Length: 99
Image (cartoon, rainbow, N blue to C red; front, side, top):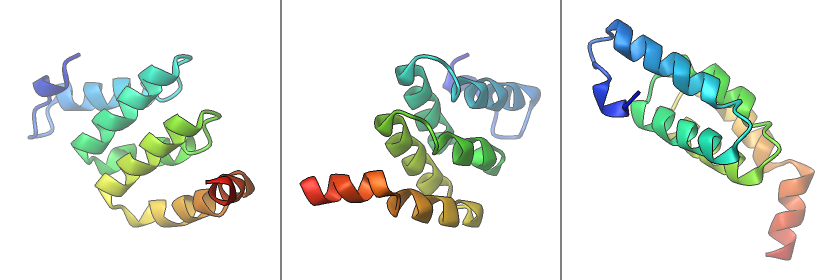
């Protein structure tokens, strides 16, 4: 479904789009997960915060980056602790040291 077909009034089209996008966060293809995160960030729906927080644990660091960015776009307080945890994770620390 095209993201441009989302009705900002909250029609069933918007609900179905959110469902499809949040489901895409668990797709096997990392590019699909990245595109879903980008779209959810653009929509800025607080309904997508919990699925995005779950996606912060994605095994692909590129996906994690886009998910974190989407959460930043939404600006929901529920994301603060998980984002801080991600930034302080050991794998992130070792990456910063090697940069």
